[in-house]
Amino acid sequence: MADGVFRLCDVVLDETIGRSTPDVEHERAVAIFDLIEENSFAPAGHAGGPYKLMLSLVDSKLVLSIKTEAGVDVATHILSLTPFRRIIKDYFMICESYYEAIRSSTPSQIEAIDMGRRGIHNDGSQTLMDRLSGKIKIDFDTARRLFTLVCVLYWRG
Image 1 (cartoon, rainbow, N blue to C red):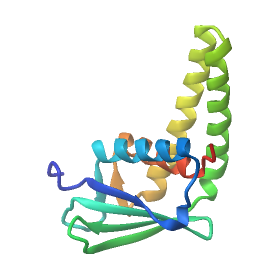
Image 2 (image 1 turned 135 degrees about the vertical axis):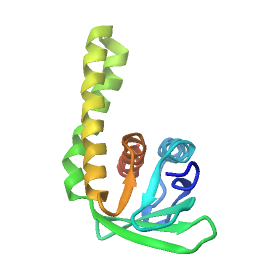
Image 3 (image 1 turned 45 degrees about the vertical axis):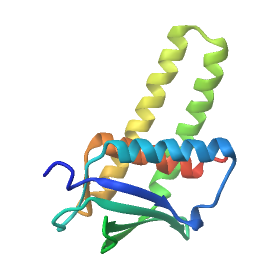
Image 4 (image 1 turned 90 degrees about the horizontal axis):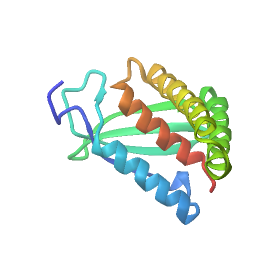
């Protein structure tokens, strides 16, 4: 892949995502920043971007609308979020345990919880890569950043 051609240059959450608390909005902004900062994103059969990604939610499905930087439509993919529900629920539960542990647990307990948290995050990232297979080629680090963003879409603060 040519450097800079197969990447996201912008990520937009449309109004179907809804707004939330300032903390959640901050986490969303950080997740988007991290994703744009470093990613590998190649829609199948397209010559190259960079790309703009608009995320929306329709009937509990994640809609990924991809355009070129100039605004030309590339593709729209609709992902059922059902395969992610349990992973996201488990991820939020272990994150709560992690934040609680930071306040009162030993370093080894915190590390063990953090390893579990990373493992669940990796599972979600791999599931996302699998669901996008044949549609959008992303590397594992991009899948991790995109999965973080998907999680933050569900976070209520």
